[in-house]
Amino acid sequence: MRLDLLDTYSRLDSPVHRLPAALKLAATVALVLATILLPRAQWPGFVVIAVALAIVAVLSCIPVAFLATRLLLLEPFVIGVAVLALFQPRGWIVFLVLLAKTNLCLLTMILLSNTTPFSEVLRVLKRLRVPAILVTTLALMYRYLFVLVEETARMRRARASRTFARRRGAAWQSLATIVSQLFIRSTERAERIYAAMCARGWR
Image (cartoon, rainbow, N blue to C red; front, top):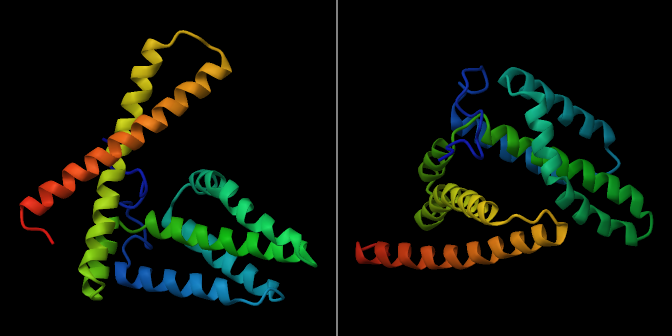
């Protein structure tokens, strides 16, 4: 099981990694809020934030290719949200602003997740007296995300070993089958886990 699906480089030994988790979480929240609240005419502010993130990335020793790949994977969702701004007057300006703000916020979160193990983030949230149900839910989501990824990989291998057609239509049909089966298995697994937790006194 891959234990570094979301925080691949979170256990490096760099100046940024050695900072307290609470400090990094507070800085991340402040930077995201500053990015969101920054007026769209303040382009120098976007440049300053981008430079600050670049410095953090260099100090953290995280490969640039990894950061770029993560951003590109999320870019379709970013563009899908920002493109809605094109339907209003001077929409292209709003589009560019949304694109810049969203990418900066995403890069900030990627840097946080890859400089701080998720378990430390949960400890900080617990010390801040975040409701226990929310912390537990986040921990369970993080834990079982790996289970779902492994389950998907096993299903894809099983499907590939039984499929000999190379047609594009067959590939899409296979993918649709895997997604539907994964949804069913995930629902059943969630019900079993909840029943087991309730049997052990969890409320």
